[in-house]
Length: 277
Length: 277
DNA sequence: CAATCTTTCCCATGATGTGGGATGCCCTTC
DNA sequence: GAAGGGCATCCCACATCATGGGAAAGATTG
Picture 1 (cartoon, each protein chain N blue to C red):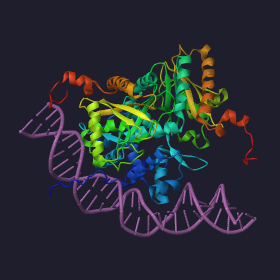
Picture 2 (picture 1 turned 135 degrees about the vertical axis):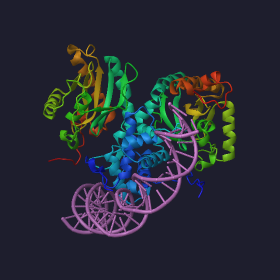
Picture 3 (picture 1 turned 90 degrees about the vertical axis):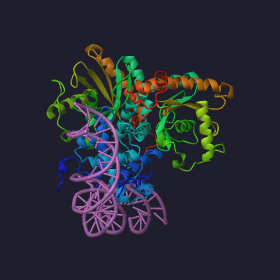
Picture 4 (picture 1 turned 180 degrees about the vertical axis):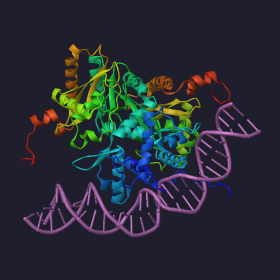
């Protein structure tokens, strides 16, 4: 029989049930305070206590979880932090930190850098005037400036809006219609930046711009975030300009020379099928 | 076919072969440049290509790996970076960064903070006069100042030196005898700090001190690292003193009030119904 | 153009993970 | 103080699920 049945739709985990569960177990620690008991994990994942316990134990053995000696509760382990730092370095994100700090200081805002992680924008590095920003946080794609940028310049495989989970409203300004969102993304592409004016939370205004690669897709998204009385309408253009300048700098810092956007279109005016050497 | 995979007796992970393999697969990315093909992974892990491929695919689905669209090679994914940042925050490590930066600037050295990760010291945060330090790096326990500190004040369950892998020599100064190491750890405990003078690499001198918790065990280890002509014999005491001061500051920043070492025995109002023997 | 090394899919086999249940601990409640 | 519930942990029979060989299709090299 001819192999045409593309059964690997977005949610088909082929041949790795135990692994999928173990990774889902790790993801449980996203939402929570930091420590979970084995039975809490079991309930949260709708698994038997035995299974959750066994998976957790295996994760502990590999250093991905840690178990408190007294409370016997689990928390994220050294391997997670280790690989995380490694991943950040491999992405060159540590080089972005000074730039973000500078941007935050100059603009008096919080400056965040995020990448696409499935159906979310994942904030990886942040510079802020007030220390604590939302590092390691997952934000929705449809209701944040970062997310809209990542969607507007998404890679071909990740453009389909229908694949997104149901659009949830966080304020009465949140875009919850797919058609509306599509129109908004068109505006974003047109303008070159995205805004979030109280769509994820009241009293928060964010402007985001993309860090583009050679193919014109978003390698990352950069946002400045503050309150409407800091990012006022008449100064908005300036904030966006500063962000764009920073994004161009990040292009150089984050991407290898042959994958940069601004450099590429100068060198490569109109050669479509040319395999980049 | 009888699998000889029992050779890893170091903890007999019961009932989670697939998970263990998947996590080992993630750890493959520690050593490497950043990107690996499916068959490279298979060879490195001594697995069939099928299995490695399936595991990698599952990891991609969960966001723990990413697959390059062109080269089809795998690299660490967004989830890893995300959870890593989250873990750092849950450990309060972001609060340590300013202190480390200050220490590095004052002393003109590289200042690193590490925790115990199995049989290694894992450097999680670093401040440096010259940008790139070894973030996310794993260092041996027996041949580094950080490692010796972590061993000297290890928790009861992690003290046994016999459980360590064979002690490898990196220079002719590296301690490779267990008895010698035990004596060295006694000296370290006595002195309150550890030194590494060319034991892991020539021309590198490091001094490390512990960040202690209420039980007197090492929550983390703090090191200043430079060359012997910066950390000279007569100035060594000063470097150690600066490190100790920083460690005490980190105690406050990293540990909840009731688990601090220095504060705990001095400040204990309203005696709880605790271990009143 | 052939040789080689990829990635990816399919499938029969049995090794492997699964969850129910039992045990003992600790803490809360009556 | 006794009773109760919640928890971590271990054991075991069952059958589900991961395993690796094999093959097809593509990519790369000489």
